Length: 267
Image (cartoon, rainbow, N blue to C red; front, side, top):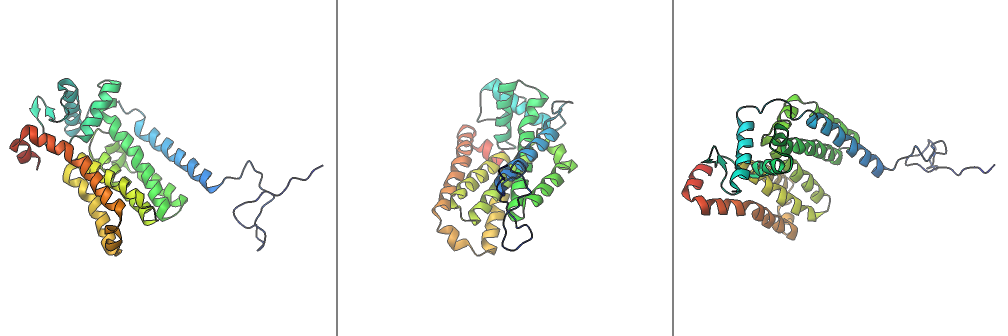
């Protein structure tokens, strides 16, 4: 009978010069990359189950959840994606991104409680996934799993993610910017572009509150004494340009249509 060759594994088997383990069959071994993909899939499935199951049950919660859903419905009714309205009155209290996304889900899936909450719930899934990725980056896969589980078992986060509110969507963009910045620190400057887009979308989600991510990253750059290196990076300046391209068009068009009324109430 032909003897099977030994199967190499990632860790020594107790002897200094031996780097294989003949006792582990090929079907059991997993490469680190395969393990990470399996963990990512489990995180997405777990967070999707918690945040999406029964999402349409119950009426919209007063005040903000119903408010934003009505603004989104009136976008479709009027066809005006620039000047938001609530009860046919101009609405300048928040930037439009959540209402735009909700209007799209209304258009695709019909006006319902489920559609009104879907953008926030999907953002919640993204936040859990990014929490895993960030914790894994600064620790290890086990740290990422623990961080994701802690977040997914936090009642306040789950409640917010299952309502059609702005906060979890904002948190998603901030987490995305932080994760991309970690990749920049690891020697991948092109991810500055992701930082810029995420920062711009954060501002388009909740105005000045969206500046939390850029402010935190600027503080990190300052403390780590990376200002000179950062300012010399072409990707950094391209990221600022992308952020401006995301932020400015709606603000400029809303001002051109509504003038000082928009400036006074929004700013």
